[in-house]
Length: 393
Picture (tube, rainbow, N blue to C red):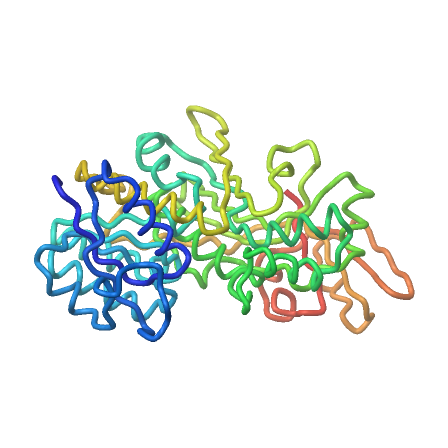
């Protein structure tokens, strides 16, 4: 592609950052021709002639060959991307919720219209996980992908573990520093990590899984007593997203769970807004990718990288993807877990297959043992806000 003419949807912190970089670096040979925004009354740091509230000003402009989608509304983004594909425009997106929900449909539309659909920024900020899975590991037999894929929760957990802050105080600090939204639900309840994991799973194993299949527990129920236990046992607590595949059956198991991580493990050293991902390979053993996963500049970096790649007509090949075959999700097996609770009314010992340790006190209790995954994912357990559920690696 000789010249990139961009139609930009959204002009928040990331969109504005991309605009400034492209203005300052003409050597990228990419220009923003039009920016569609929702509210035209706001003052913005760009010429007013660039802005419009009409999506068709981008979609119907034949000179615009690349659409960069950076809006928060997943439904609106879905409509925009489909129309862009049908107009034979390449698309760069950072919308992980949209991509995870409509991955197969969008990949099919990309192929039908012979355009590129790039979305590195949707997963781990500045960490090039998708590009590595596509280029370096495309012919490798991968066994698992595991790590920290949400910078907001990692920032909060770092504060709780290292500075003895309560969940509420740590969340407030994350919001004040720009690492958490005013409504942090998607991050702190693990939905964001589950969407990212679904995207990663397709590129790692070629298996399309649904976000709702991911066994998910967020961090909102964690108490200081849980971190006290972790310190006594030389652990820290991280929200770990993990997908692993059984190559004999083709079944995938995907979880997003607070997890005890030994302090001497690489992933335990990933703190604050940083992300870290371990890739387990049959050929090259274990590889580790690390970088900032939250904030304006990491996301901007990934979007700009995708825009630059379009100059070379780059697209994801996803060689492992079995287009017509949905991934088979494995919901069986056992998991060693810790469950903490304040009231004896929340005692869930009957759900354990084996109990290794039981602690009772006036203010807090916990049980450590082995639980069948079928029981772990039951609503009485996984959705009980009175329970701190922490898995062991």
